Amino acid sequence: MFSPLFQHFQKYISLTAEEEEIIKPYLQISTVANKEYILQQGQICQANYFIANGCIRKYFTTDQGTEQIIQFAIDNWWITDYTSMDFQQPSLYTIQAVEESVIIVLKRSIEDELFRKVPALERYFRIILQRAFAASLNRIHYIYSFSGEERYRHFSNAFPEFVQRVPQYMLASYLGFTPEFLSKIRSRKG
Image (cartoon, rainbow, N blue to C red; front, side, top):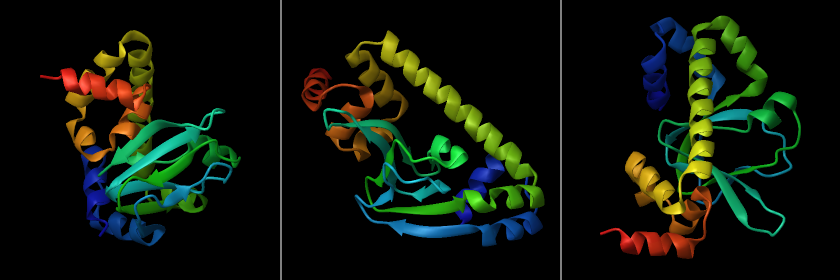
């Protein structure tokens, strides 16, 4: 059941069979039902979550009561709230399953011990964080530089699997516009 994660590790670092055996007891596998919460706003995030299979979203609720999605994670992606986890402060975000998902949980409380035993994992997480940071910067650039329709076209070309898996109103929230606007864009697609 850990194979998706270990395959992901191997894309970035080399692990021996012995190191893989050291890592396994530090991981937990959990099945999360559709709409089930992994983290709710106000809770302190305690772990990193690797999506072995499924789709998860991270969002916050605006002062007007609407949900603003800031991240999706599908198969072989990580999701967490680093600010909450690192500073042990209440999260501003909610992390919730969009569909039934299988996640692999790496608790923050044991991360340092695991990194001491398998130092290559620190390199792995540095690479993953660098890529996540770059993706966040690109997203900010697109929000400020692209029209709504350009954002949709770029996103649907770069991540066609999301367009198929994620409900339209969630995709609209992530891209920063209303579901009605997204419907108009999609109806012009031809």
